[in-house]
Length: 138
Image 1 (cartoon, rainbow, N blue to C red):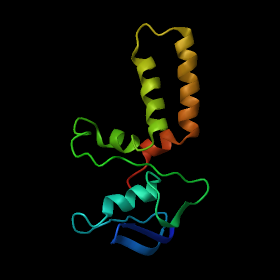
Image 2 (cartoon, one colour):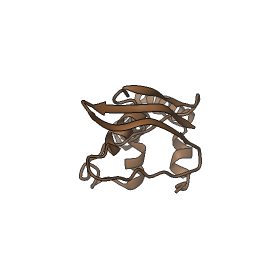
Image 3 (cartoon, rainbow, N blue to C red):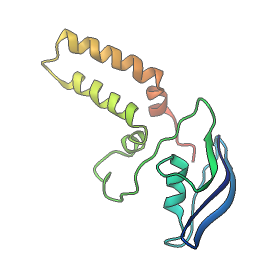
Image 4 (cartoon, rainbow, N blue to C red):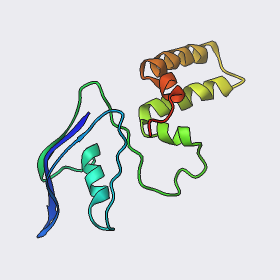
């Protein structure tokens, strides 16, 4: 669960939001809507920890993680959707790329094979196989 308490941000006299109280609960899907310039992207950047709020707090329940993709409409056009989603958890995605590169290398050595085994173990521990097998929740 992600909890927002008393969150506030303003630039000069312009208040983007003030005293925001919110709980994002597991299993639900959320959307942020509003006019251009209303502060949607800024709000999401605060939630992800990219920028600090002026007031209030954002807390993520222990044992959970947040994955974030940047707002670039063209950056992921050539990627499969699942890979794009996995890019939101950069460490897991990088492990997947490295182990797959070893498997695709016809000149891989025994040392490379041992590295692939280490990566497979870490990938599994981080939930990589579960992530790839999960149906979307929304």
